[in-house]
Image (cartoon, rainbow, N blue to C red; front, top):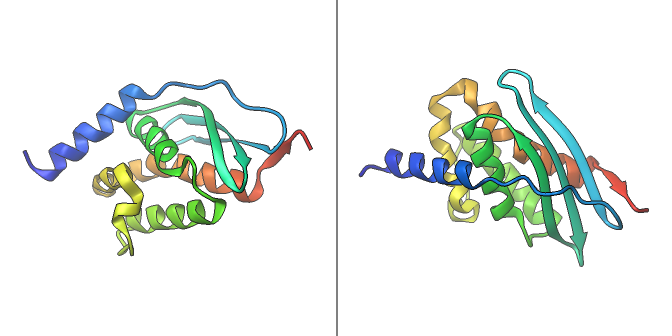
Length: 146
């Protein structure tokens, strides 16, 4: 089995496991809604921060397999990290998707499987959408409960 087959299996496993989670509200909760009109991917992402860490991630996600896998992977990679750490991870993921060298591929965990998507340029936006949403919700998002 070659590396591309492993990446394909990883992407499919995450896409199948994606389960929408009730959106959050209340103190220290941020929410954003984004979509990719090219593919039809839609995401409502809500995040709760406690003690400086992303404590809970919830979302309503509907779209293609790549988008669903990227959303589930992003949740796993970002949970229990600080805003600063997540901003760095998002930057690393973006660089990887632009075929640039990244300083710590292991930090991206299973998100590294999505690097195979660069061979399908029209699908890069599908993989980027959840990461873009996470960055925006943490840095520009609306706060509930304040």
